[in-house]
Amino acid sequence: MNYRKLGRTGIDVSEIGYGAWGIGGIQWKGGTDEESIAALHRAFELGLNFIDTALAYGDGHSERLVGDVIRNAPHLIHLATKVPPKNRLWPAQPGTKIEDVFPHGYILDCTEQSLRNLQVDTIDLQQLHVWNPEWVQSEEWRRAFEDLRTSGKVRYFGVSINDHQPNTALELIKTGLIDTVQVIYNIFDPSPAQSLLPLALEHNIGVIARVPLDEGALTGTITEHSTFEGDEFRGMYFRDDRPKQVVEHVNRLKADLEGVPGTLPEIALQFCLSNPAVSTVIPGMRKIRNVESNCSVSNRGPLSSAILEKLKPHAWKKNFYS
Ligand SMILES: NC(=O)c1ccc[n+]([C@@H]2O[C@H](COP(=O)([O-])OP(=O)(O)OC[C@H]3O[C@@H](n4cnc5c(N)ncnc54)[C@H](OP(=O)(O)O)[C@@H]3O)[C@@H](O)[C@H]2O)c1
Image 1 (spheres, protein in one colour):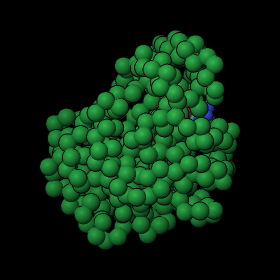
Image 2 (image 1 turned 120 degrees about the vertical axis):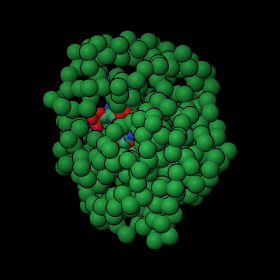
Image 3 (image 1 turned 135 degrees about the vertical axis):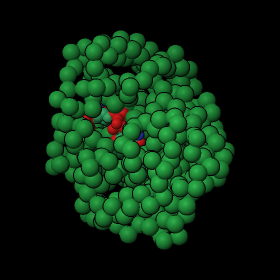
Image 4 (image 1 turned 90 degrees about the horizontal axis):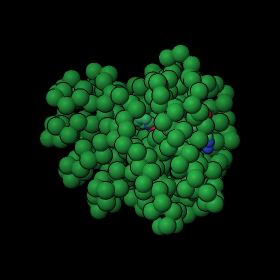
């Protein structure tokens, strides 16, 4: 496993981090805690040292599981979590007041809850789970971040940028008041590479590349007939004729990648790490075999510029979250 600086925090994070939404359950079915715990331990053995969770994932279940598992980790694990929007609206809606989404006291209270769930005294990285650029001058988040830093409860701060809207955090980066951004960045949505990633590099802001496998679309396992259990998130994400659209896009992608070493998900992760602005990429991975495959990507180095050029036409403008 190779490590990169998480921007100006100076923390050395593993190139492959652990996306801990799926292990929260509730919105992600098809896994067990036993499987998740085994997957996390295997990831640690392979050198992974960064986990991205959130208070909202499984109503705290993901954080509690992570808190239990890191106590037996063979090395220090750096923890990132998130404050959920108080109005429970993902993504942030234009026109909403920050007082209704991230009031000062609420950010503090949520952080206390996360500290209890994670069973730690300090959180390495606290993130706002949604972001609205209209809030950039607001005192609510600025004071909350300052108070949490001063009290020693949080070391660094960031935001998780709304789905497919990387440019909504450009002004925020320029304030110099955040340390990281978390953004959707994958073969289908490479748009952060235009403005956000160069700006992050210039300001030494850590970049956490999320949803690198497009919620499973870039694993190549979705078929035209894929269905998901009951109220599972993926049932919404891959609804109607979307599986068919995914299969068409993935088939074209696979044809262009013929001869490139690695499986499709491995190449998808390698794509993210090929951009030097990315500090860590955080696939969700609840199975040991996925952990092993994903962690192996760190040793491969970047994709060649010829392959990166070939991937450009595969950008796919869509928003399956809506
Ligand atoms: N708004 C936000 O802040 C936000 C939103 C979404 C995600 N995130 C963060 O980003 C992380 C990653 O996103 P995600 O988990 O939603 O989606 P993702 O990483 O794009 O895809 C996860 C899916 O890929 C499968 N997978 C992983 N590695 C594989 C491999 N090598 N071969 C085949 N399949 C593989 C997983 O399998 P299993 O089902 O077996 O695990 C899971 O179904 C989250 O866990 C979370 O930490 C943040």
